[in-house]
Length: 214
Image (tube, rainbow, N blue to C red; front, side):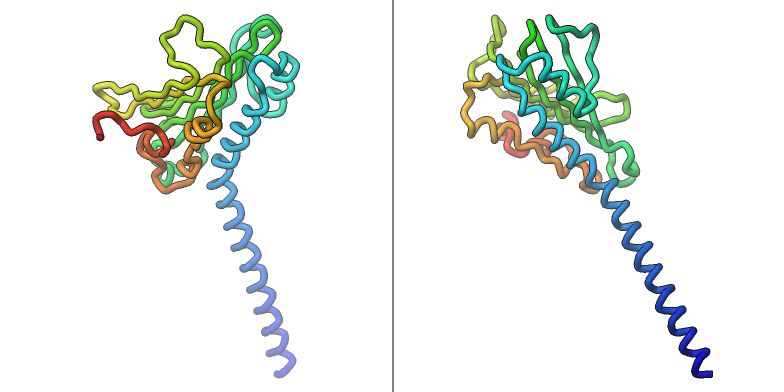
């Protein structure tokens, strides 16, 4: 009888051990699904920052594109090329993520050097675009004839349908480190928060106040 009880006790301990193992594995897998998009987005932006306008070459851009699996948009050669990389949290259940979030980076080469970098963060993933509220950060050495204040211009765009439709930042390399930190302080937690983030005010909490909310 004593031997039987001892065997049953050992079996119970082994069973509990396996239950703990599988429960821990389940938590690990769920955490990976939950947090991977935000980690990936942060990684993409950190890699984008390694490209220097006017200095990084077509070959540098190609290496980065291969590293992050970015695809060229249209014809691509040293004279002109544009790469895109986009991620979202579509794999999370809709009941958790809500409309979802999308993050993307873009970088352009012209005459064999990097001339433009962009990062965009937005709500919505259903049609593959960044909508209906988004933040866009764009950097060029010169903005040409465009009516753009340099080295930094930032402002809101609104529509009758989407009040907080977009917050757009145009910047040059001469922008201060403070402005650069402020306008790229993306709220990556929107990817894993329950129901995500409502609009661009949450995607970039350090954005300028919306004019009509003052």
